[in-house]
Image (cartoon, rainbow, N blue to C red; front, side, top):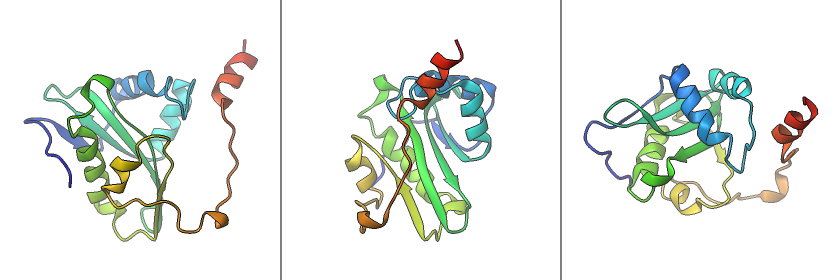
Length: 152
């Protein structure tokens, strides 16, 4: 199912200011959270279980975040692998590490939303919503960009 990581690469859950800055540099341009302020991302990371894909030098090359109570539910978000590294199985390895984490075992529900990576997540057991008519949401696209304009 999952590709092996290149030699001396790893996925861990520890992060620091350099990792925050690197993740923000990618996520601030991502379609799902475009314009997210650095301080807001830091607050989100502090309240989540974070997975950092690191190369042999320890540099962040990919990232995933699970919002979870670590008992019944998790929501997977902010997943990325740097553009130039895609197609090498790194995303599979990152998601495999998420799915294998001890705090995420035995959950009743593990959710995510994606625009274009359905195949990746399907390889790890994710399926379309069984009962989409039961789900509801509040969506505020462009919220971070609006707040940026209002603060000028």
